[in-house]
Every structure is written in C-alpha cells, then in structure tokens.
Length: 243
Image 1 (cartoon, one colour):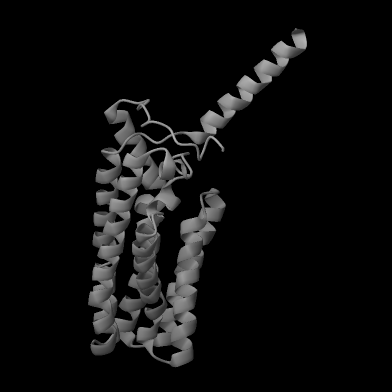
Image 2 (image 1 turned 90 degrees about the horizontal axis):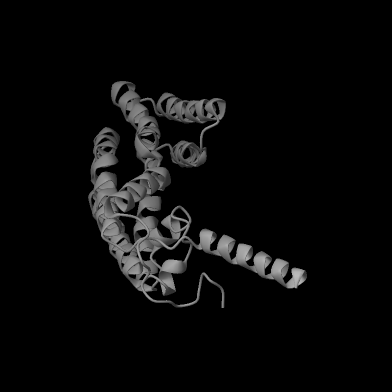
C-alpha cells in the first residue's frame, strides 16, 4: 500500500488558518484561470453577439470570434504563459463556428458550449454520487495531494463533495435558463443572456469552493511525503553500507 492510499488519522494542519486560506485562494486562481481566464472565456462570444446584433452576418461574426480566440493564444505563446485556458477557448469557439456554419443557424454557435456545460454539470453530480467528486480530481494535483483526500483526509473529501454539488447545481440552473432560450429566443437575445451568465455563476461556484475548502483540513502533500521517504531510504542504505 502506497503512502498515497494508506489510511491514517486525521492530518495535523501544517499551516495557520490564514495561510491555508491564502494557499486555497492561489490554487483556485491557478486552476480556473483567474481574471485573464475569464476575459478569454467571455471575449469571443461577446464579439460574436455584438457583431451579429449589428449586421446579422453569421460569417463575419464567426470569423471575428475565432480570430480573437487565436489572437489570445498567440499572445500567451509570445508571453510564454500557461496555454490550457486559451486553447480550451479556441477549441470551444472553433466547434461553435463549425456547427453554426454547417447548419446555417447562428444560434448553433452557442450550442456546443451549452452541451458542454450540461455535460460538465452532470459530471460533477455523477462523480460526487460515485464518491470521487470531480472538483477533487481537478484540484488534487494543484494542492499536491493527488487522491490522498479519498482515504486519508475525510474532511477534505467532504469539502470536495460539497463543492462539486455546488458546481453541478449551479451549472444545471444555468442550463435550465439557456436551453429554453435556444428554442424560443432569437440569436441576439440568447447571446446576450449567455454573456450575462458567463461570469456570475462561475464566480459563485468558485467562491463556494473557496468557502468549503477554507474550512476543510489542510491538504496532505504526498509529493513531500514521497521525497521524505526516499531520503530516509537513502539514509538507511548509507548507514547500512558504512556498517
């Protein structure tokens, strides 16, 4: 049984409460892209709906949205920044552009993203019901705890479960608003509502995640544990060789 999986008593926090909250804040900021990630998420869709509202031209709107997504990737490449958020934005916009061009319906630019949101909501809920909350799988490596929270840190597992429920239900509520609009509203109405719902639900989910994790036990740094075990093993071998 590895150090990651073996059960143990509740971990003793290694940091003061304020430090733990700061670490949680930094980890969430890194995992979800921060302010820049939010801008990169909103900007292509905002450009699409703005141009389409003005001239009703699907091709111009789609090309502009895709162009700004690619520009954001280029900027990150030049600055040698993390690429995951920019690339995910490009793929999302590209799917929307392709889908809308194939159907000729401008509203279909939004459909892949809406389906992704629905799938993600269900993933949060299903994984939590299965005892492996998705938010824990996302944040575990960020906190250097991997899956140790599953068997060694029950308080943290509970916090991850609460956070995953929050994400799942918030995203489901967002879908409950958007999918009826997809059928009943025009492209501009759907687009503006979707833009309005980009940031507030996301911020609410991130804030709730922070609240749950800030009150949870400190993460167990399994990487530090493995390094300590390796150092101890080397010391034992060295001592045995000298003997």
